[in-house]
Length: 353
Image 1 (tube, rainbow, N blue to C red):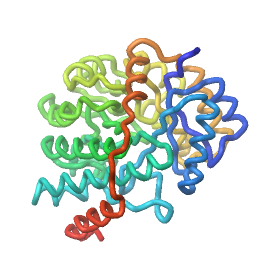
Image 2: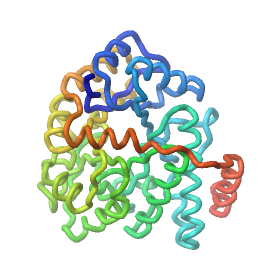
Image 3: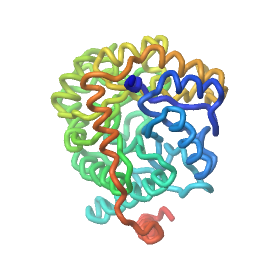
C-alpha cells in the first residue's frame, strides 16, 4: 500500500468539494490543517474530519493553529475565548507555580475542544522569545522574554495539550522573535551575533523531545547566510535543529504560502524537502494580494501543485511521521468546568476577565 505524501494540506470550506475529494483520494496527504474558513461549529468540524478520513481511508492527523489571542481559528461564540500566551507572564513572574498552572490549564482546555472533534494536533506553542523592539509578528504570541521563562512555560503548554489527547508543535525553529519584518510579506534577516541567537535557540533545546516542530522562514547571518531562510537551509536544519538543539521529531515547514520564501509553491516545497524538512505545510491561507483565500478553485490549484511536488514519505521522514501518528496520547480525566473556573480565577488576578 502506498505511503502518505509528505505534506499537510487544507481545504476550502465546511465540506469537501468534488475536486478536493478526488485530490485527497489520489494524494493521501500525511496530515490536514483546518483554517477558520472550514470551522463553523463543533458538529460541522467533526463531520468534516470524518468525511476527510473516509476519503483517505486512515486516521489522518488533523492540525489547527489554536494559540489563543490573535492566532486562533476557533472563535467565540462557538468556542471558548483564550487570551494571548504572553498574558500569563506577569503571573509567572510573581508566582512561577501559578503561572505554569495557568499555561497548563490554557492548553488543557484547548485540547478538550480539539480532541472532542477528532483533532489531535495543535500548531502551538510558540517557543520564540519576545523581543519588544522587533516586529510584532511574534509579540504577544510569545510565552516569555527569557529562555528560562519560555522553556518552563512551553513545557507546561505541551503537557497541557498532551494531557488532553493532543500533540503540540514547537515553533518556529531556530527562533522567530528577532524578525524585524513580517514573514508573511517578506523574508526577515536576523543579523544578531551568534551569542545573541543562542538565546533564541536555548528554549527549543529544553523542549527538544516534542513529537513535532516547525521551521522559521527567517535567514540568520550567524547560522548560515543572509539569503537562505531556515526552511531552505540544509546547514541550519542539520547543524542547528537536528544537531545543536537535538530535535529528532517530525519537522514541518511553516506555511509554504508565506511570501518570505519567494518562487513558486513547487520550488518552495522542493527546496524545503531537499534541505531536510520532513513534510510540507500548506494552508492556502492568502492569495497573491494578501487577501484571505476562500475561492475553492484557487485552493484546489494550490493543493494540487503541492501534491505534485511532494513524494511519498520514506526513510527518516516516514519514521518520524509514523512516530507522530503513534504518539497521539489518550486524554487524562479532566473536569472541564472546574478547569475553566480555575483559569478564569487566575486570569481575573491579571485583570483579563
